[in-house]
Length: 326
Ligand code: UDP
Image (cartoon, rainbow, N blue to C red; front, side, top):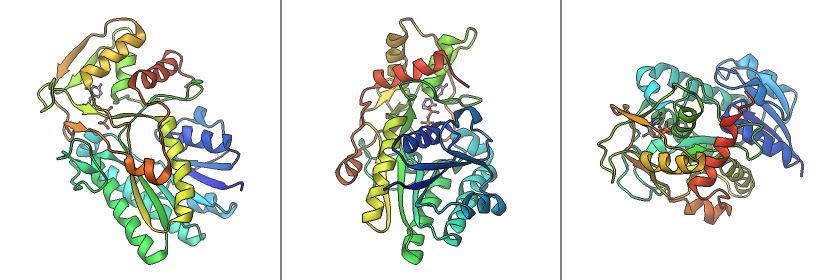
């Protein structure tokens, strides 16, 4: 069946890949985005409504003309360290904005919701391979803003019959292999783009935040997962919540941890040159190690990442960063 889907935050990094994948799967897609961090140039698929989740009139604009089958919600502020400095902005955008969106959904009778959460909800983990039932103790306002929405969705499932899937992304990375869209943050705070940019832009030197974490080489360990694989999980989740009522939570990661030094080595091989760096003090709010056990998504959704090794992820990111279209 051809579906009509709303993608909030569809001008952003993951949202634009999602809007494209929905369109290429033959469904109708509408993007809702305030363009605060997103890019108009990324909106090559579907219809676009410029609006802010904190403005009810903007939400009415999105919902009044189209009967959506489901809403995918990618809008949000995402920089851990910034959230420590600016908690209001994080709670206002990520929590108030989401509550408004859910309210608009109730008003227009839409009750299927897929939400971008984060591995940051686990804080400083006590498990090597984190499963969804790991204790939730976020270290930052960013992580808490995502956890609060997860909890709200549990209540909405109970009270209003909302069916939802929350995806706890580990570290999203890579770009669509044809490099028409990719990762473009300003300023860029993420590791893989910064590693690549330090090679591409002369005079831009890579900083490594923290060298004495409790990890084998002292730098933080992360689980990098390709943006296309994140998006494919969302489409599978839509089928799943249509058949399984309630609020569901899934980890999305490759299940392999790489330290910052290991990421630099892998990137250096892809690019074919040495990458210089300096150590800087650790950022506040960073976990030493975040690695996913994603067997729940594999078992219940039939999710299988296509880009299951770091090199292939970095290759697609490099293709984009060499020649970004925006
Ligand atoms: N990081 C770094 N240099 C950079 C960007 C990130 O050392 O230019 C580190 C960061 O402190 C963290 C890891 O790389 O330990 C991954 O950071 P990123 O911002 O990509 O994702 P996060 O895990 O914070 O969501």
